[in-house]
Length: 386
Ligand SMILES: Nc1ncnc2c1ncn2[C@@H]1O[C@H](COP(=O)(O)OP(=O)(O)OP(=O)(O)O)[C@@H](O)[C@H]1O
Ligand SMILES: [Mg+2]
Image (cartoon, rainbow, N blue to C red):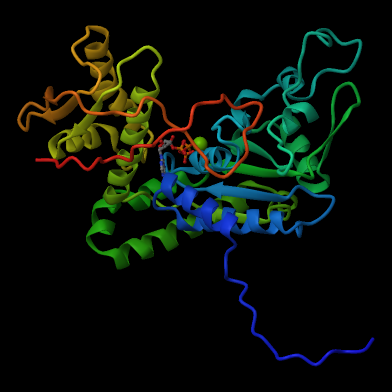
């Protein structure tokens, strides 16, 4: 072969294409304080788009470790939302629910002739796996949550999928997982991690260097616990382990913004309701954070605190006609009693009637409800908090 002389050019593998950059931005908007997890997913998706994932195996087998309420499940949901426009565009298996052999039949169906063969519709069929595929994106997301709770039977099934990317159903049909990313989450080591974190959130926020040390230690504890609990044949099938870090109070503030923004989008999208805007004073935010955050449970209870202190009262105000189209409701909290108050601060605001819930990236999907395009409002709004 004749070589053509050409000027040498240094290529830059760190450069991101436009689609990948948009995907990354999207994830960063949804996921707070877990840069390692976002980076792992972005790199993986990039490899997949380039078609360079290994053949005859799942696209990747990822193990997510780390404290409860730190975003392990949320990251997978955020990926589904970003790529397919729907948080449900994944198959989630709670391993704790499949402890006995008859429960495994819910996943793979029972053989012909067995009781209930016709009635069971297995969870892990090819159709279920492919249901969110689009013309240009043949990618499935499969999440095994809390794998440390998996029974031996489920474990065997999982090992087969991780290694060969195939599964044989009860009726002998084969399911192919070679277009699937397998995510597995575990809280292993969380008791030890909690021990390390006792009071740790406070001091780690006071000195970032100590926070980094704490995270490195948490990493070691998590991975060592996984190695102790899981067999080498399982650990060898994992392409990448990501340890989620403990969330800092500042992270919780950002998660609160994301969640409040979602509440606002829900209000704007609520059918038959009169859209209005709300804003939270710093006092109201502190009140919700106080109630919704516990170092032990991360952001797990934040949603509940928002529902209780904000969504439920707003729903009551809506139901009784006390808020109307175009109102601006300011939510405050009494510094002594913590009692929330709701004040109409303005009325007659021009509010967009429809909004686009998620990604800008993809063509319409048949499984996704179609909505009129509109403007998204980002929280906090341009309205000043006093
Ligand atoms: N890093 C984060 N970024 C954004 N939201 C988060 C983050 N961590 C937690 N949340 C919020 O808290 C909720 C619970 O988090 P998630 O279910 O992802 O926790 P988890 O790490 O999977 O916990 P567990 O180990 O108990 O299953 C999420 O739905 C989300 O609202
Ligand atoms: Mg989870």
